[in-house]
Image (cartoon, rainbow, N blue to C red; front, side):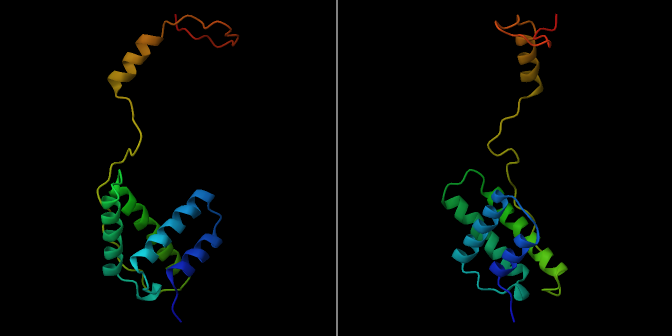
Length: 144
């Protein structure tokens, strides 16, 4: 009897106690799998099917004008990889398939980190501020 990816993901999520957001991410990947037409059972899942699915996820993110399609594909890759590794540990599959390499992605999606020069400018602009009105804390604001 063959195991569907949906069954494997359900068992995988019930085996641990992931956060609600993590569960939602896995269900999003399952939805993408279904849209892609993933009727491949877990036991017959090979590198070609995984590559085709991840390429489809990437191309779909590009056509929907996603801000970081590489990250979208890599999240799906890591979730599939976690489920397949778990299935192998549970003896649901004999040998886990090889996964394609991750796609290039922006590592700071949606975040802006200050450069050293910006941090220094911010520090020197604020290190001599007077104590704000109503500041009753023992910790001083200034560093005079």
